[in-house]
Image 1 (tube, each protein chain N blue to C red):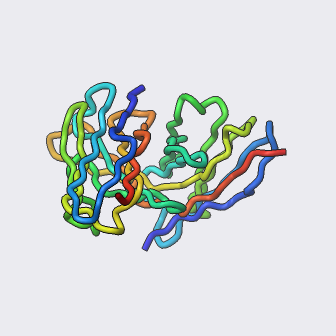
Image 2 (image 1 turned 30 degrees about the vertical axis):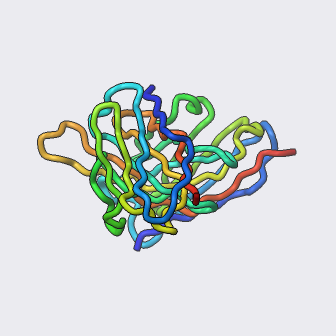
Length: 107
Length: 128
């Protein structure tokens, strides 16, 4: 099975900051990588699919990159509504696997 | 606009079977290119994929749960269901149903899959 890791596990940032979250797969997954945002008490929301494709309706300040085993999610200018937990997920094979999450909170 | 809604008991006793249903509204569960999945999240923890089903009944499960999981579909009711047997306190979680969408890409042998629509989730507590 493919294992997913994320770093950091949490970070503190200010509105307007550029934020980068890293996701790593235990083996190559090409670009079969998705990113989700989850706010407390809410279901996850798809942000990025296929490593770099922006889901419809998601602000352009979110971007994804990477291929193989290493991926990044970047928020170019953090907004108040972006404080949340972010998860990566591989869709290269089953079982589908999520990363442990990165919590972004207010500095 | 397609929506998913989980339903089922919020409290299950240890050793019993957890049963949940996801009702799809605003669209057909029989549409091609979609799988329908279950994902859970223990309180304060991360997301765990349980399994997914196609409208034809084709399923795939997380091996860590496979011996206890059954996912089924009822196209006449536009629903799919989860049964998890022999539950313990470790199965206490918010259970989400979700649509897994497919994007085929020219030149790629494999499609991209992603969970693009989710239900609101339902908390199931395992306790006597």
